[in-house]
Image (tube, rainbow, N blue to C red; front, side, top):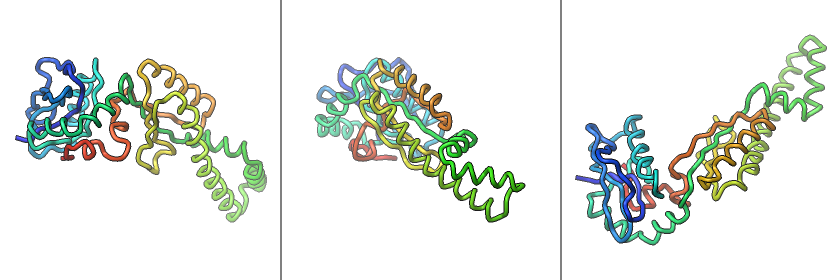
Length: 252
C-alpha cells in the first residue's frame, strides 16, 4: 500500500487528535512516521485519488491540526510515496534540507493577497491622472457623444491607461506590504488578477499586515484586495519548484 504524505515536522511529533482522518473514501486514519529527529504526517494513499473538494479539504484539515502547535512543512495535495519505508528513507536523505526549511518557516504563516481593479474607481483614477483623457471625454460629451472615430479613440486610450495602471498598482501593493513580510512568492499569472502575491509573515505580526492591507484599500480605492489566510506556507516550502517534486515525494 502506498503512503500519502501531508507534511513534515520535527520530533516530538505534532499533536494528532485521536481519530483524525485524511483523504480517501472511506477516509484513511492519520499517523506519523519517525526518522532521525523528523516526522512525516501520513496515511494510506487511496487508489485513484482526485483533487475533489472533499479531498482537498481533508488534506488542509490534517495540516491545520498538525500545525496548530508545531511548525509543519506542508506537502502539496497528492504527494505519495511507495510505502512507509520510502518515506523514512526520504526523511533521512533530505534531513538537512527539511530542517533548513522548517527553520525558515518557524512561527510563520502564509497570507495570499489577490488584487483586481474596481472598474468604476479605476476609470475615475485614470481620468483624474490624465488630462488628455478627461479633455477628450468632455469634448465627446459636449458633441453629443462624439463621432464613431472619437469614441473609438477614447475607448482605446482608456483601455491602455487602465492596463498601464495595473502594473503601477501591482507594484504599489508589493511595495506597501513587502517590509512586513519575511518572504514573498508570486503566484501564477492570470488575466483575472493584476497581482497575486503570497506573503510569509510572522504569526505575531499578522495583524499589522492585515491593517496595512485595509489602509491600502482606503488610500487606493481602485484596488479590490482579497486576502486568504492564515494558510499553511505552501508557497515557501521550496524556492525553486513544486513542493512535492522537490521534496522527494511524487505528485499523484
